[in-house]
Image 1 (spheres, rainbow, N blue to C red):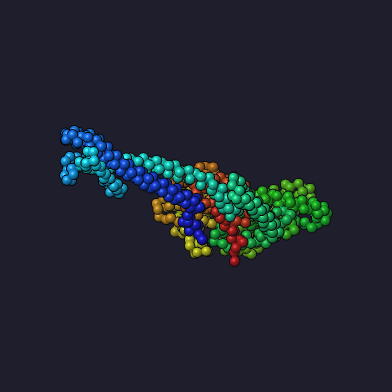
Image 2 (cartoon, rainbow, N blue to C red; image 1 turned 90 degrees about the vertical axis):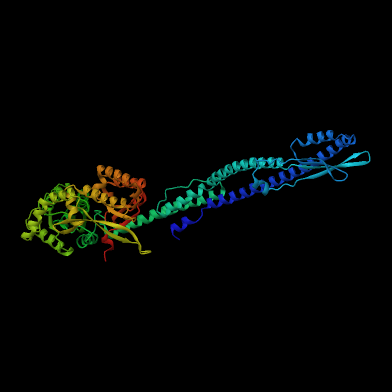
Length: 601
């Protein structure tokens, strides 16, 4: 059952509220109708008693007056009773049934609606009394009570009761709503806890309710959260252990040969990656003899020191990775690096390793050799490793610690490299000024129902009529400090498209680590999202997992913004860095994108 189907169902709160409300309505409606019937019956009896009392009293009074043959006095007696207004008709008839005196009230009461009189019909009581003179009957008095005054009293009673029952009903509904909400509050907390557990978050603890049954459910849920949390932690530890055993070198914590070659293959052969960079092979010369002479502990410490220096170097270059290939051989790959920068890195690596205390202790100047090869568009893993190995052999032939870059380059390659170094900055600045970034959309398909989950936003630049992918120009943008401006342009274009109403689907925009770590960019992004708050929930921002190595706080700040504006945060290249997976419990992510080196082929 889908989430939308569940939301269409009635909640337990609604069912309880309406059940209690219907009972209250039926109770009050029954009481209301019963009061009306009782009041009507009471007024009907009052009318009959009123008519009978008036007829009896008037008959006794007229017996004396009529006996004296004083018609005027008789009329005065009848008028005195009739003028009180509570009678519809008063008639005195003689023994021949002729009307001697007759009074009729034609007054119509305007304070009572006609529909009410027709709805609640009151009988008009008709009562009589004989007029006697001794044992002789002189006539008959007929009295008919006026029902209008009973209608007035009944109408006023109904109005008063309606107001009273209405006020009581409103108060009762409010109290029922509050009461049901208080009772079901623990269920909402338990529901929140269940959703948190489904999202691998086990830190929330539902408070203990006052009711015994819900308290037991809450206790069971809290215990289950603890159990699942421990199980999840154990699974993470097992995954980390297996990953370290299969892909990492246990001594230096760098990648092993298999993990390095797999990532290098993904970098060189995937269209999604930067297909240029520099491979550096590092060899510690005559390491076996040093191991025998200095002992295994010294040799292991030397390898660890080299690994620490390479780790520090990786943190300075986004997306780079290193490995201990075997014994005393290491390899490092720097994506997006061209020849001039590769030379600077080679000098830096050689100087850094030569400065290690363990290397100085050996008192040798022929210990460290580096082979460097820059990747070209047609290079694959084997050819690039072969070039770097040839360069390493040339470096070893020098006799002293040195580095060598593979120099078999055509004149066209050399000129292209020089042009890249001198022209890329001006070219990218020009494209930024023209807002010339072109966005392509790649649909990401949901495997369950084959629907479009979201669209991946891909950046392109039109240079000399040729569309360049992001893997070509973004390394240069990173090199010249322009990544945040490109990320601003891409985000602004996507938000503008969404605000125009051209699409209601979600879009995923990739942000560079340097952009997320840039306080100025984050302030700009917050202001832009505030301006386009209505469509912010349609965005997903993807950040490389590598950011967790040097600035997890920046990623957490982005996730806080996601909670404020409703957009999603995803981690791409998942598993490529050496970050423990435990961060998945600390950071609220909507998804992770597994690195292509794990899923290729």
